[in-house]
Amino acid sequence: MSRIESFNKDTGFYKAIHIIDAFVWTTNFMIAIVGVICFILVKIGIVSSLPEWISGYNLGIKMSANAMLLLVLNNGHNRYYSIYSKYLELSVLGNTLDLVIKIILAGATILQVIADNSIILFATIAYILTFFRNLELLSTLEEKNPLRGHVKTAWIPNNIRHNVVMLLFCTFFYLIEFKIVYFAASWLMNSTMNMSFFNSGAFGAIHNGLIFMYVLFFDVYWMHRVLRKIKISKSNFFKMNPMNKLAESMEAYNEAKVK
Image (cartoon, rainbow, N blue to C red):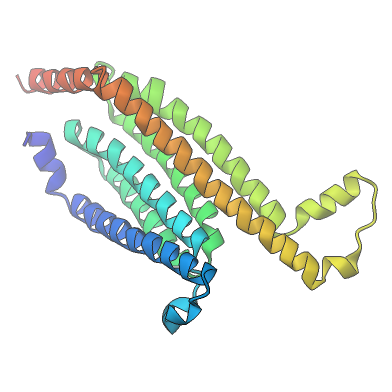
């Protein structure tokens, strides 16, 4: 273990981050499994097999998808964290941002059981914080540090693109959730909103179905986007050795600084 790794691991931040990471991983893995089981039991009509404390919550296919997405996002953060924590003495601000990101993921893990639609807001906040984490990381790296160019040309631009898409997802979700999109469509089409139907149970069922499918699409889209990125990263970084070269250059850079 290098001196830098030892320095980072001796901080309370490192220990707290890994404790929360274990909670996020274990809890979401269990929720994902239970959600799928509950969904299957409901679909085949064995609802009596569900304990009361489970049947009272929103456990099902959407909950399972939410949990899977949180596992993917958590793994994505770990992948970047393992890279810069190995080669850079992390600042208090940087450690704090990493810890807050983990707390956001832990908060989403807990609150999704009560409000499963909250996954979109929490994921958006986590992505925005990741952007600021990368900016802080860039500010602490010296010009000659090999990691600086990678953060500047790859991590931050990718994060900006992700943030824009995530904010669009979040904005449109709340336009639907608060039914603003229906009034906007009525105004654009010069049609009159039928308020009696708008307040009816039939409309409520349609609206809830739309929300349900929107959240499921959000989960699947971001799992695909992040996992595809990891797959590309593995094939291009690890098999084609750019990441190994980066690691070698970082080790050489750190050794040169010590000498």
